[in-house]
Length: 151
Image (cartoon, rainbow, N blue to C red; front, side, top):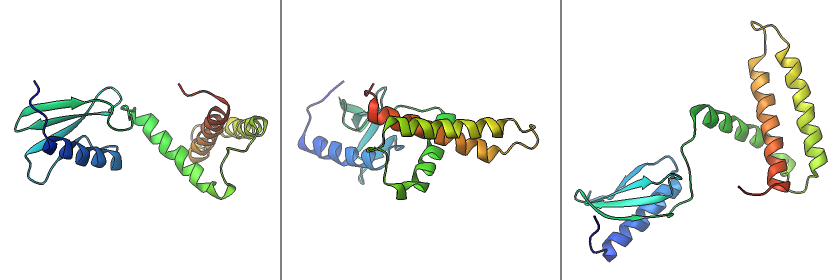
């Protein structure tokens, strides 16, 4: 499976690591000469497998930040969450906010969501529903970030 690891392999690994860090969605990296191929591997996609001319050089584990595969709905929703956070960047973040304030803001958005959901299906404001859900999720994330424990 493995061959003698050379400085050229380690140089290519570093090049691939940088490429994967810069582009979390990148799955395969090739150098200019196409002599080496790097594949993002592992359950958390934090490993790099280096191949040379169809032979594996080595599987380097935990080389980049973990980015497990995410369901399409979760990915779309997280993009909306980030969009809502950017709209409010001028407020300076949540690190110094008390959990009671964050919870109150989450409850405020839950009440608005309940109102938006009461509309008839043909006249529901789907944009408002998505915004409120993203805000609720963001406030929950802020509370977890400030008060919770990393899992």
